[in-house]
Length: 166
Image 1: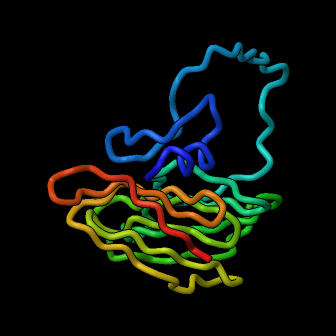
Image 2: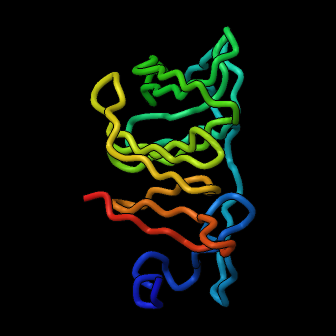
């Protein structure tokens, strides 16, 4: 990936780094960043269960995505309404590893196996397969607007793979 493409993807204060298995935006900046104190205790608006969470929830628009195990022990990606916590979709995956995902717009990319990332378009209550990436080893996916970013092992070298999804 050339420097111009990297500058377009990441602001000056952050840059793409493959940290472990996940491409992240990390780094330092000479700019001063103030952190505001939490004034009020968080309010519980709704809860969801029973579900064994294996990921952090990700909010995209008015939707919450979360991965984990359902009561039967099967791995699932659950889509919830952010306002009320109502289940919009629950998709089961026969994955031997915890699901790792990234959502952007109406797409979600899910690492469903050690060497596979599937990209889905969310259509109402179901996921429509859009494409799949397979490599001997591939990191957790990261969706940024219309691009899919992932670190992959290619000829024993780690490379950043960027795919246009349009």
